[in-house]
Length: 250
Image (cartoon, rainbow, N blue to C red; front, side):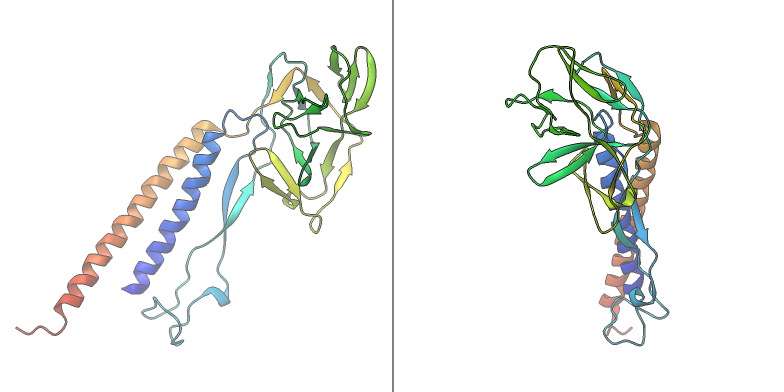
């Protein structure tokens, strides 16, 4: 009985994690450059399976118990739709690549091209973090800002710098930090220059979350979670009746 409750609880926890990730995806459906996350679970190996002959094993009633083990969120890097905004500081990347952003914690990478000019006169994210060019931080000293298809930043008709857009050798080397920023794990991959850069000024890449699909999946997960809760409640009631009946005689 205890083993069954353990498995049901493990299943409910897996559904809870999926529900949390799906809810976050839906909350960012209108966030430019957002990449949806998906829950990934590791298949239990022998070290994660409880041995019924092991006195230290709990929640087993015979046979092997293989719990569902939540791991982490996997990010889907497929492109989102490009949406026209008309804002000259908005930039969308066509194809592969990431903008390089200088933060207080180091360089981060993003597909969110909703840029602005910070109080220091630098091209920056809405949070004020400088957008990196091939020559470093990009100073905007002028009024007419244009970014051509190759990523060149022109201020009042003169080229100031070129957006530093790079590719990452292994997408799984990127870890999401915040909504649209990614940190590179240098033990898994490295940034590499792009031979061909194609950007679109006055546009933004939208979120790659499919609202209908995410809502449908969320409803299914909620129902699954509720089913596990009912199972746990039922098994708990059965266990209580068994315990209360121990020692009684007719």
